[in-house]
Length: 363
Image (tube, rainbow, N blue to C red; front, side, top):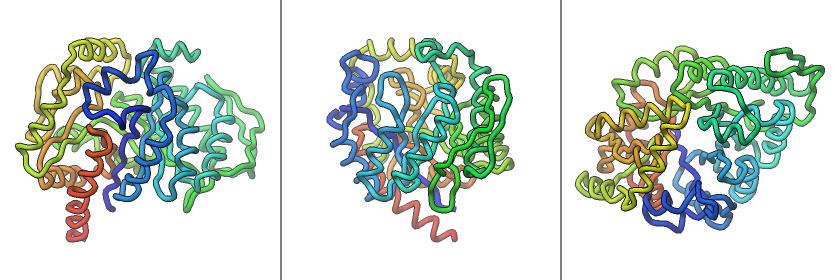
């Protein structure tokens, strides 16, 4: 199986910004942030470039500071022909029947190029703003019921009524006649994100792929093996800095450190106030050690968040490192980098061909 590479869709306004600290200083949580608005011209250009260099999908992040992920996926999916979209969504914000109807409609509009990244929620304050007052464990339990109902609709394809009685949902004679339409699929791929035992159990029970932050191959070997034994894939999230030499990559990585101490204070507050084990764990690791191994740098995590664990190296080193993860059973990656477009183009031009040649040689 060839490795699949996805990329984070930049937030609104980011493609015009050159540095990580610039985007963090301006974006997301500020009231006047351009991230709150669709950035269609820039996003269409980005999607076209991603499609051209062989990126499989773009992941669209979900928060109260950004546009709705499903609507963005629809708009972009109508503008490009092959690129797929992984829409992050917090289950429980609408009834599962309505959600399946909406997602099925979207699949028909963009030829089935839609997958779902299930996030149970990380900020209690943000969840309460959506009317969700459940705690961490309850959110995962509810997500399990939500996906059980959704899968019943997808696999019945409107031929059998769906009935369900659980702790969080009750469905009586549910039927959706609009099917999920995709080549060789009757349901979207489901990516379950999170490090907690609840997230891993949900991924094994209801998902197609477990998504988590990158770590060293030695640390990930056992949990990846357990996931694969349960028949699901594993996708790692990371940032990337790759250049022609390691020295050049190290300089580029160091240039990403912020010039504004307020960024660090704000990000630390977000990570510490979250009830997500993923976010808290990433900060704890970053505070203990700067480099997890020769290529994995945690130096950006306290400034830019949990997903900023960064793979740093030359083109050959990065390709070799990603293939090392394939050897332990990882099959997919979701990558981001700064500048947003340029780092993706470097990867597609100088690293991805090395990986594809190595995969062909091994076959």
